[in-house]
Length: 180
Length: 180
DNA sequence: TAGTTTGTTTAGTTGCAACTAAACAAACTA
DNA sequence: TAGTTTGTTTAGTTGCAACTAAACAAACTA
View (cartoon, each protein chain N blue to C red):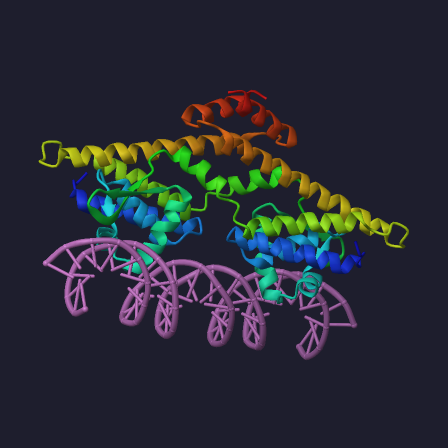
């Protein structure tokens, strides 16, 4: 294999994470910023991120704050320097928990609430109607969906409450699943 | 609570699933189609889906095929009728498995492969360079990321291989996690 | 054969999220 | 005070995925 310069390899990595980011419905800029920070041994400022990723200051400013809110990136201040510096979170399990926690996205929860609301209205149904069978069918279906969502919600709640999660935790779960 | 007609309640439900669909980066039409099918006791044809969702034939045709590929919806033919009919898959755990299975999305896997490729190039590094520390740092970082991805991949592989998964499976996992 | 009923494909449109450029605000220095 | 250095907000642009309208294809009927 032909050896290439570290800079070139890094650029490929940045492209790769950008695509992954895009695949999950996140801005490409977020993947690129994370990649730069993840490969840097030292904290990096906004202007250097602009230089390394090719996005404008405004875009970086917005994206990096989103990344920080998701726990993928951490802000650092240096004494006697009013620049903001950033470093990547390298514990991905922590990141997963942090993202799951941040699902008070209101957008999603409002949608889930609407399902719950539908169930409520169906249960308050006039059960002497001619189309009682239709009502019952719909009621059962929506109730099942609700119970599925509740199960997932519980799982997420437990995961976010874990004090530690790591490779070993995953191994344990795999063990449990393969045994059963 | 004021009781409303079944039709109106259904429409709300359709809106709700559309939003959820959109939230996950899927077309709204897919959520709407699934909602219609999910609440119908009988199989439904393309033209009726057009009528109930308000999308055009072309859009429905495309979206419903995607849904079928993801295992959220099943095609049915009736004898002596050349229409296609569709029903919703109501076992959500089956759906989750089916979606995870369908992640041979090539788009995503190509991106993951690029990370693996980066690691390969870093490992073939000239280790007598002046910036050896930089190379080592990058190498370790990418190796850690790779191992995280591998763990997830294993988990997904195990889940898709399960012959059954249901509410009880989730309960078991929750039990395991809360004990540890 | 011509006409009908179905689903699919294609060319073009449209809305929206991610972006840029530039104004702005805040905190500092000289 | 005026000027600089930083990050944020805003108005406008742009690319792209989801859509529509309509042509098309396939399988049938009369």
